[in-house]
Amino acid sequence: MRCFLNAQDLTGNRRQWGGTGILAHGPMSHLAMGTGCDKAKLGRWTWARYRGKNDMVLCCVSVYCPVPNSTGASSVWNQHKCYLLSQNDDRDPQVAFWEDLRKEAQEWLREGGQLIIGGDVNDKVCDPAVETFFSDLGMHNLIFEHHSLDGAPTTYFCNTNDRVMDGLWGTANISAVRCGYLEPKEMEDDHSAIWVDISFTDALAHNPPTPATPPARHLQLSQPATIRKYLRIYKADILKHDLPGRQFRLEASTQPSVPLTAAQAKEAEAIDLLKTKAMLHAQKKCK
Image 1 (cartoon, helix red, strand yellow):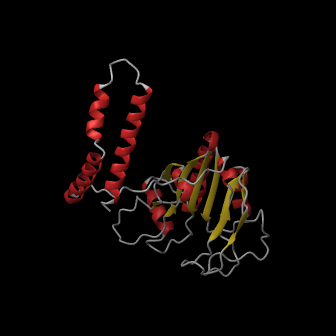
Image 2 (spheres, one colour):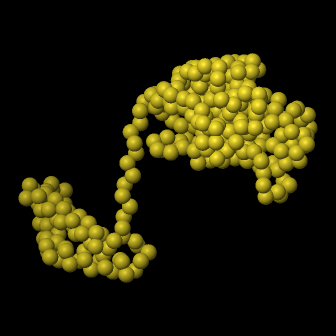
Image 3 (cartoon, helix red, strand yellow):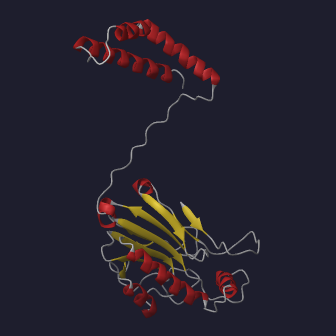
C-alpha cells in the first residue's frame, strides 16, 4: 500500500484534505516494481508499476483533481494554488492538474507497457475536454465501453446535476471483464466506489501463479530456554542413531580426490536423512 499527500503544505495543520493512494494484494503485490507521486509532491496522483511477462509493464495511477474552492483556506484547490504561486506559477490548480498529468502520462507511455488511470476528476467524465484528454493519450473509458452513460449514477452524493465524476481509463490492450459502480453509500465515503475486473493476461501478458509463502519456523533463537530444549532433543536423537560415530567412520574411510563408493554414498545419504529428521523433531517439540 502506498499513499501520498501534499508534502508542500507547511501550515502544520493536523488535518489536511486531499491525497491519493494505491493498494496491491495477492499476486500483484509480488510483481510491484516501484511507486511514486506527482512530481510537484502535491498528492494529486499516486502511481505504481508492475512487471509482467517478457518485460511487460503495467502502470496504475490513482488521481484526484481539485474542485474550484477559493474560499476554503484548507481546501485542496487553495493548497495547490498556494504552492503554485510560491513557484511563480499563476495557473489555475485544475489547469495545472491536467497539464502536469498529461506530461507525466506521456512519460509513462514512452517508457512502454500499459497504463490505467482512475479516480475523481471533479468534472463530467463525458465532458468533451475530459474525453479528448484521454483519447489523445490513446486511452478509453473502461466503464462506458461496457455500459451506457444513460442512467449512470451520480457518483458524488451531494451533486444534484447527475454528473458522473469518477472514472477509469486504460490503454488499447486493457479491457474490462466486468465493471461498474457500487450503490450509493455502500462504502463509507461521499462517492460511489468504481470497480473493474481486468484479466492478468491483458494487464501482464500472462496469468502469474499465486506465490507460495513458506511456513515460519517455530524455533525462536532469541529465547535461551527454547534453544536449550532444542539442542537437548536434537542431541538425544543423533546419539540414539550414533550419528557422530558413523560420520567419523565414514570420513575416515574416504581418501582425498577419490570418489565415494556406492556404499559410502549410501551411508552419507542415510546420515543426512537422520540428521534432518532429528532437527525437524526437535523443532516440532519447541513450538
